[in-house]
Length: 227
Image 1 (cartoon, rainbow, N blue to C red):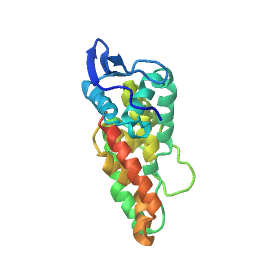
Image 2 (cartoon, helix red, strand yellow):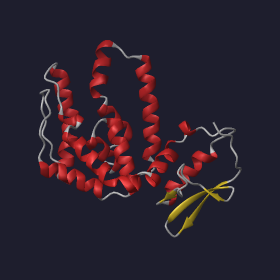
Image 3 (spheres, rainbow, N blue to C red):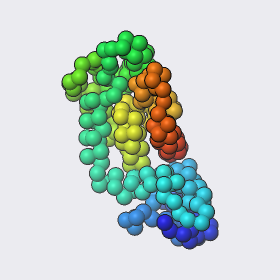
Image 4 (tube, one colour):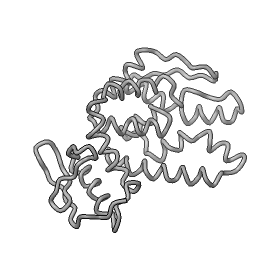
């Protein structure tokens, strides 16, 4: 863990966006690329993480910096793969797979999940079928292509956020809803944990799972400020 080696953290407007400086030196990624933010807000968020470090620099406390590193260094060269990955997530989205029993869980899934699917179908043309079976359900190519088109239109930071949210929620649709600010992170996270919450209500909560979920939610809430 590196010691804090700087005193002043600042942001600067340049031709391509906004950069962060540490004692006047431009902040770069681990691969020595400039960490460039599209908006002043994003730059200020990253700068605040660096300014919050006291004696030692703790990367685990800097989720926005980590994501911006990926967005600047990895995403530009891997956009086709990331778009294809998002499209693939749409094929087996969490919200499409319902349980047959118990009925009260089935009804909760229908009540909580279906409105999100209806919304994304109506606004973005990503109409996904649902099932209570165990086998993978084929989804319409037109819907999968609509999902890919949504991802294609995003800039590098938004695309990186989309994939991170998708992996965290286990749902491309919940990630899209958060990125477009249709759902809050907290609401989307609760929907992604609907089955777990149902089981906890019946059998009690696991302390370790509670702690892990709380930590993940804190990170996702921090990242959502980059939207």
